[in-house]
Length: 385
Image (cartoon, rainbow, N blue to C red; front, side):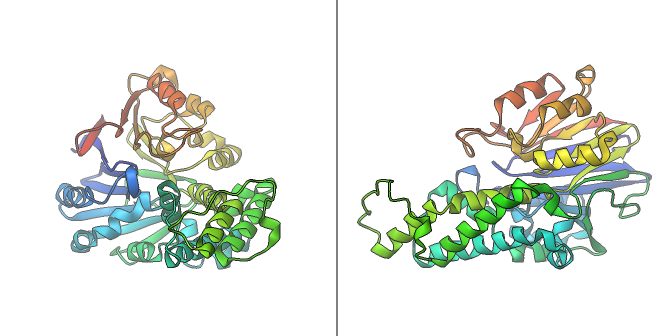
């Protein structure tokens, strides 16, 4: 593999895991980019052990870098679930995005509304469990994916032999661990509040108010809609549970969780590796706000790449179509490789994931490989130097 780059994409249903092996001088570096999936019909934990065992085998028990691009279960649950295997391995460095730093919200007070919203999501979820309210599976999955999941994050913080790097745009990783491989961190911004300023900030505070009421069980009449005909109470629910469930829906609890979901996606670590003449771009779940900010700050960094990992499982808000002219110009179609970890019929009705228009456009710009419908446990892409 001295003259080749290999990217292995694992089949996890609706989740990300990539094992990247790159030559770096006399060594081959192994980088695991995310490892997780969502519960429910988007996947399950069954594939985790086989994948962790393959990572251990392919790396001879030594990972140079383990990466968690952002704090969603579909990008980190596998590390924690398979900690028996990762505890046996040597992991030199862990990379996370800047907002995962334990002191982040003390250092960036403008970002505290997102933390407040996440704490309320935790409280709301605990209340639903306590009251034995059965939530719609799609909403329950969205909730669980956006809880604080402190145990998962702390496990990764304590895993590396060297240290944890909390990265933001422009942060250097020279020598940590790379010598000849160049790494450029494109996102996120240090202060995540830049992604929800202006009207977005007003929306965020509205969602906090909504979820505060939902989590606390207030009887505030402002959240009632008297002109809406009320459905009959299901026999299996108590009066209080039915009132609470109706109220949580009316008060926008679902939209509140979707708001924090978008906020977390935009904290995704986006980075480019350059090995010889090859450029590889990994995007986490970065959404439109992250790409817009990068274009404003460093448009010149949006340059043609040989490999692109598609953001946010191929959703319509993960990859601006006009961005592709910069990253995947059509003149390079024969050489460009594109990967997307996704599964149909899991997320979205109005805007299904993956977005069909995006998938069609990507096929015009390179070789597109998707986990959707993949029957093998993984698929490889190799690039010659």
